[in-house]
Image (cartoon, each protein chain N blue to C red):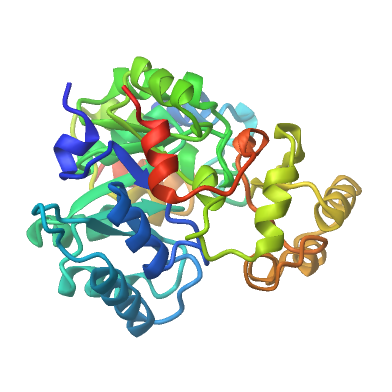
Amino acid sequence: MDFEAVKEIIVDTLACDEEKVTADARFIEDLEVDSLSLVELHMALEDSLGHSIPDGEIGKLQTVQELVDYCNK
Amino acid sequence: MKLLNEILGTRYPVIQGGMANIATGRFAAACANAGAVGLIGTGGIRTAEELRNEIRTARELAPEKEDGYKPVIGVNLMLMNPATDDFVKVCIEEKVSVVTTGAGNPGKYMADFKAAGIKVIPVIGAPILAQHVEKLGADAVIAEGCESGGHVGEMTTMALVPQTVDSVDIPVIAAGGVADNRQFKAALALGACGVQIGTALLASPECPIHENYKEALLKAKGSDAIVTGRIGGTPVRVLKNQMTVQYLKQEKAGADKMELEKYTLGSLRRAVFEGDVKTGSLMSGQVCGQLHDIRPVAEILEDITQM
């Protein structure tokens, strides 16, 4: 999954400003992710990737780039 | 559909809410003896030994009945409590029947609970969270609408329960806004298999809160149960009093967290133990407007659950 695909999911689930979703944007500080939106993001990513993500993994990631890297591992 | 009492072996399809500082072992035993699931709330408990004592007290006060009925005791884990890892160990060692969880994700404890045969029932405030915990192995969920007291989400019970029922295959228990038989039947009509009751049980002689707190509940109108902390992201439903009005004023004026904490620090304990109804946090759901008498837990449960 490339950066743009991950960005689309983030914008869609967090309803945040597209311009804010840069590679080094931080989830909590810049994108204001809370516990509910974190689960929404987790489940949306699982749908896109077509496989399940272990619980708690997404919450460990700090930036958008880290998430992109995680999705392509 | 199986009702909650058939799933958990209680007399009634009711879980007593695991209210912090209120749901002691003694109170849990009273509710369990009366036929509900009696919960011990870890919200105000500091150490593992304290929790173990509460569980043992509950067990002692709620022994097996002559007719063979076994009162069901559980624990509500407030996951933000820093001692939660230790509390989980105690729940397993003491072999409690059921654990409900709030304020976080119970995922990391799920395997241990399963291995110990403990049923795990997370409290959720949105259908997507129910889907998430179902995948993690939850046995059921408590869908708690924002009519409830204490920490609340965005959705109402009326909207949350049917949407949760439609999005998961595990049983759904309704919470928030249930204090009489009409609301109990409504919850079942929405697809719930039972209810969790908090506020209605506060107005009982068995409930350990201060008499002033009980009086304030009986006096309160439904519209007095207001929400503080919406702006800061930690919404809590409490009765309107000097402290909450001041808090809301400061919150609107843009006060920061530290400033606001001055009002809330220790305020639940002030309400529960000292009966300070002016500056304490009198947590209450919107059903406070329906409470008119102090009645025994057994009578409250029997009335609510008439079929």
